[in-house]
Length: 390
Image (cartoon, rainbow, N blue to C red; front, side, top):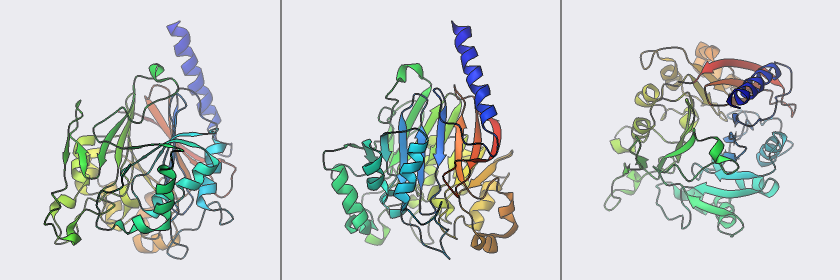
């Protein structure tokens, strides 16, 4: 029986490889596979996960990017809002509902499309940093009074959707819901939220990296970005990290504790694939995080001409921070980036398109597949790998 099961997995993997040829339509998810879709709308972050048993997760659904020339062009085009493009993408991948909607933090380019996505593709459970009272302070909590947050709060407190606050250290909040016993090697570990960071290892212990706010000058309070959620997703030997917009390079004259990346990176450890924090802005991807995560693959959600910063890209490629090859995939680089950054952008493995990480059954290897984002053809532009999970 075991030999038959192994043969079935091998046949599935072989069929998967044959179907992933440039020019062909991207093959849909299959049981045992972990698919991670970095959807490019040109207006913010949206990452759709199809987990090994078919459980679905949408991390962020943004609608906040600036129009050209500073911003990237909308993809596929401007005929529909980002929420509709995201929902149509999810449906095209075979999902009729989303088990978990997840917002890393309350900025428009990460959250403003979530409610409208849910109006088309039902979301069963919402995960964020503030439920149920949304009272945790942040220095730039202006979003709490903006229409996008007001709509989201009304949606998540309506009773029509289950909701929960992400609790760092736990690995039982985002779980497989269809067939968990079949995939015991899958886990989502909550790493950070609101400045509380998992201590790492096998325990659920955490520590706060934010000080007591009493007596702290208001301008030194943690920002919305600092309060971002972070998780590490593991499947067998494969690990993936996403951390919202958390910063790691402290502004001159500001307190050192505002570097959230360093304690998060200490807890997370090496991963295979990492989504850049804060779109690669200059306050992110500090040297410690780059060296600690040391991924084989970096992925960058782009919606502005300042994504990424020149020195961030230098750190990503630096073999002084960690040895060995690495590939960087961007969703939507434009000419403005090239004018500022120059030839270093020629090193990108891909500069445009939806970026899909497809992890083979069991988590031993993965590929990165770039899809055409100019139309809803879901045509494969390029296939990279296979990479061995570490």
